[in-house]
View 1 (spheres, rainbow, N blue to C red):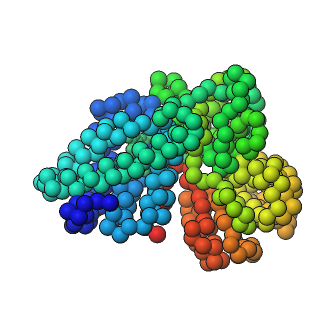
View 2: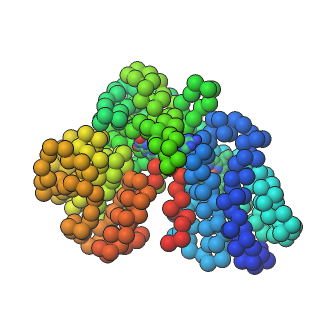
Length: 407
Ligand SMILES: Cc1cc2nc3c(=O)[nH]c(=O)nc-3n(C[C@H](O)[C@H](O)[C@H](O)COP(=O)(O)OP(=O)(O)OC[C@H]3O[C@@H](n4cnc5c(N)ncnc54)[C@H](O)[C@@H]3O)c2cc1C
Ligand code: HEM
């Protein structure tokens, strides 16, 4: 809780700070990286920096957190901070680093807002920052403790036991411990971070969901190679750095630097009917969940919905069918934009995913993963089918600016 004085100052200054928060976070990263080039090179995702996704996610989180100090809603605070804390834990962020962020964030606030930042205004926003930081530090400490590691000590080497093509542009890597010991436990739906050393000397980190079940001795991740895109001005964006590095350079017996798994998109501990909805490479956390459900011989109703460009683009296509067949009350629906020469069938449709004909059982929990516009559309359709908002869970494969967005 903020002090009453700070609460009033935040109420008065939130509109101004909120309007400038995008400029503030962009300047903050420029300042922090000028002072600590190693953070840009070896910790932060430079693709997200270039695209602006991380700046947007940070701006959204700070503005939402400040607004939630005025109109408290603990569930929303928990959602926003849990998402960030899990990402931080998967990167090994440590408490001492919060002072670095504080210095450059407040330098940026003063530079953008100028004289509007009186000592009283600075003190009130300082209180917001440290309330947020201390909550994150405590959540991250809890995550490290639960994982049985010292704060920040999340990295380990694993050996690639198997590499397999799962579709034309997707490969999976089965990862095993180097010394034959067991790998840390994880919950179905969680992800790990992979760190690779690129040719320019940078160590870049990306997250990959575990596409295997926790009961398996090894871990498996599935990586889609990200191509450069044709942009509206006729130029091309660059090909994805880490996904292409993994696709081109990592083979059986290679060692890979990865972290202990984290992530808050996990199967809840209840027996609610399930709806697993994915598009494209968003299938990976669903494969982990489904594989776990099949291994534990789950008997609840489960609907698995997947959308993809075509059958040949659909990673883990055959495995998905096998898993659904192993589950007594599971049904599957697939949509492909291009069906090729195949004819539509009851569970195989041409076009984009559409919940219109899908029966949703009362009390259903839905898990979504895919491009943000796809998930937003699915969420709308689920709400129309009376799925409770709190029963709709999702994972964004990038900086999450959805969690902090106004409901
Ligand atoms: C929790 C989580 C789980 C994930 N799980 C998976 C998974 O299971 N499988 C999977 O394949 N992926 C997964 N991802 C995504 C993955 O982490 C990477 O984001 C993805 O592999 C792309 O990384 P990259 O280094 O190849 O691309 P980057 O180099 O990071 O590029 C990303 C995009 O930015 C664009 N870009 C880069 N620089 C510029 C520029 N200067 N101008 C314009 N555009 C630019 C690129 O063209 C590309 O489209 C997950 C992400 C998260 C957060
Ligand atoms: C109160 C302080 C902080 C806030 C509000 C904050 C907020 C955020 C948010 C919103 C994200 C995006 C989460 C997502 O992917 O969905 C994020 C990611 C990240 N944060 Fe923080 N953070 C804070 C402190 C720190 C500190 C101290 C560090 C360490 C220097 C740090 C490093 C990172 C990194 C490396 C990422 C991932 C970036 C990427 O993948 O592009 N953060 N943080």
